[in-house]
Image (cartoon, rainbow, N blue to C red; front, side):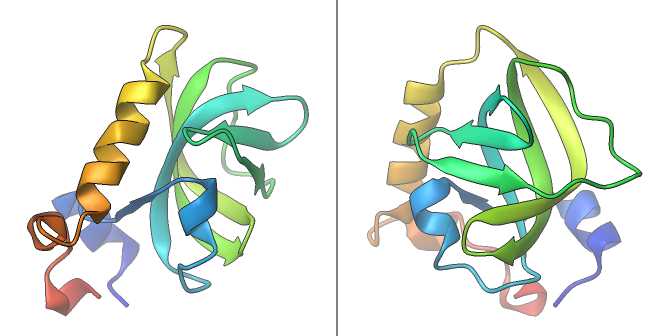
Length: 118
């Protein structure tokens, strides 16, 4: 697995929703976009819930739509490494459409990280 600095340099990491998180290996670095809910939960772009593991180094916004770049802790939880606020006007339905296109076998190779990073 590539070091975290390499992920930040290249911006190449798997984008997931709640349904696809369960197919990603623990420890993998992923990006998930969704709406912050009560407690440490994000409602992902597909409407499913992902638990956010608390860390002392990350300050979570109180509300809104965010992108969480983090490590997969289990099939339903991510430990944040970086959190970016997208405000309240980000189109999650459109983003979910992007994820659908990215997973299409006819074009998925265009979005996959290079083999050296896998």
